[in-house]
Length: 95
Ligand SMILES: [Zn+2]
Image 1: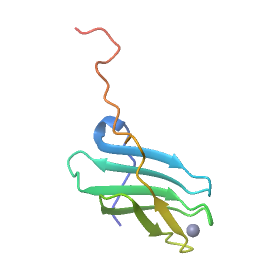
Image 2 (image 1 turned 90 degrees about the horizontal axis):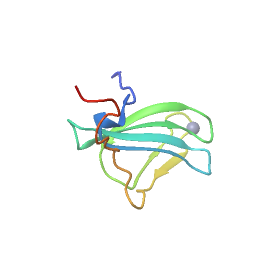
Image 3 (image 1 turned 180 degrees about the vertical axis):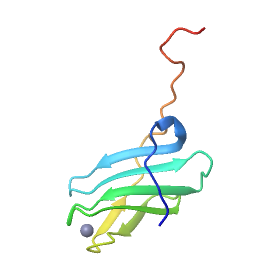
């Protein structure tokens, strides 16, 4: 098993999106900066509450099946993409 963790900061990623859908599915998608063709999805299945992480080639829309109950989980691209927020400058004074 690879040890994949959600990014600590959005600045670490090329794409980052966190969503909770009406059907109970929740997921976080991120694409690392150094590997822009790969996306990781951390999800919670709305049906069985299973929490898992999958890795796939980066493309949206994307659908997959819950590793536990097999329910289909669909990820639609967001209108007006939410890319990583870029901080212009840290709030602190520059030295
Ligand atoms: Zn499930």
